[in-house]
Every structure is written in C-alpha cells, then in structure tokens.
Image 1 (cartoon, rainbow, N blue to C red):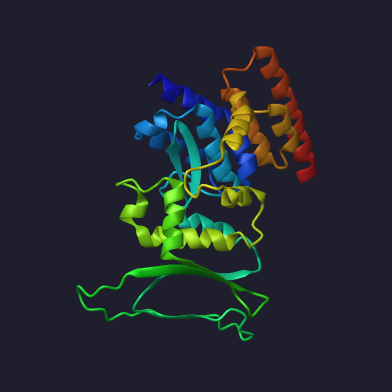
Image 2 (cartoon, rainbow, N blue to C red):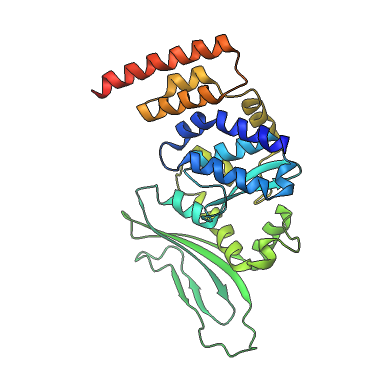
Length: 292
C-alpha cells in the first residue's frame, strides 16, 4: 500500500511535466488516475520501479496517447521490474494521422486462399491487389501467409507499402520474448501481425523523434534498451525540474498545472517551494498580460 501511495505522490508531482509534454492532446489528470487504477490491479506493475512508471507515462503522453489500455492506444507493460510503454495499433494510427500528408493507412492479414498480388513501382498506384476469400467452408484450412500495411498520401498517387511473411512476423515475436501462453501473440495473432507490419511501415513516415525512438528499438514489445532505461531513470528519479517547467510553460493552463504540482509536492523544501511558487506566479502574470 505504501508503494502505491508513493507512486501516487510522484505521479501527481509530475502532472505539470506530463501536461507540457502532452500539449493538450490527452487529459493527463485522467491518465494519472487511470495509471494508478491499473497499477493497483496489476501485481507485476507494483514490482516495477517508480521511475520507470513515470518514464512510461511521460513517453505515452508525449505521443498524445493514453497508456492505460482502456482506449487500446497503448499499454504500460512490466518487463523485468521495469515498466515500459508499448503503443497499440490504434495509438500508432493516431500518431500517423498527425502527419498532414497521410490520407489513409490500412493493415491486413493475407491468407493462403486469398487473391493477393504486389506490384511495386506501378505508376498508376495499383500496388496491392488483395481480394480475401470470404466463402471458406467450415473446417477448410486457410492459414495466414503474411500481412501488409499501406499508406495512401494526399499529394502522391503512389502509396507506401510494407509486406512481411508469417515467418518474419513470427521471428519478430520470438525476439520480443512475448510468446507466453497469455501473450496477445497467442490470443490475438492477426491484430499483432497487423501491428508489426504497421510499425515497420511507419519507420518511413516522418512522425517525430519520440515515436521514432520507439520504432527503432530492437525489441518489438519488450521495451526500451538498457541504456535508455538508465537515462530515463536519471531524468525522472530526482523529481520534476520546476525551473525548466516554469520557463517552458507557454499558456495559462500549462503554468496552472505547474502551480498545482508545486502545491501538491510535499517533498520540496519549504524555502525552495516558496521560491518556485513566486517564480511561477510571476510567469503567470507575464502570460496573462500577453493573452490580454
């Protein structure tokens, strides 16, 4: 119980930091409440370090995604006593559509009885011809042979296409270490296959540095490399950088979040809290004068 209380205090201390990272794309207060509820019901997450949970939440909201799993935008997953953020299929699509060039993205599983052709370089943009076999008799085998993702642009007829065989997808799952009995690879293979090929496709679409780091990680689902984990722990372990947050605040809402975090932060020295509070109030006056 004391561990959960400590986590709650740290999450609330970081509300302002989360709010600035989210840029209004996600309700960070709702995210914090959802994460607390998630951890309270997940014993393996309770074993994770507080710093790694804070880092996972920050990574999620930086992408504008909900990490609680309730919206399927992403998930906070325990990996060897560390919490990592894993974007879901819907989350990847949400981030992709932030690119104004993207008109439509699809990902589909291809089965052996489907009609499927790939024609890379077709000048008319007819790259994929996929007609699923819909009238397969009960008991008739129709196993998956692969999956593809396709991105249609607003300013270009030629789409971007990525194709992976079932063997490539399975190899990716093996590398991730997520073939346990209760893994989504066992319970929902088609969705995981679509997500895997979609992640490969998104590597070719400019989507910002945060998602780029996630997509470049060698382990598909197992989380961030050790170096990144250690760096993140150093960044989050000492509490929020209030001076930096006050300086970065660009709206009245953002500075109000900083002030709320200051009020709730019981770990601050009283003199330091007073100094920071005065600095935040001064910043709020400056922002108010600009707004008027």
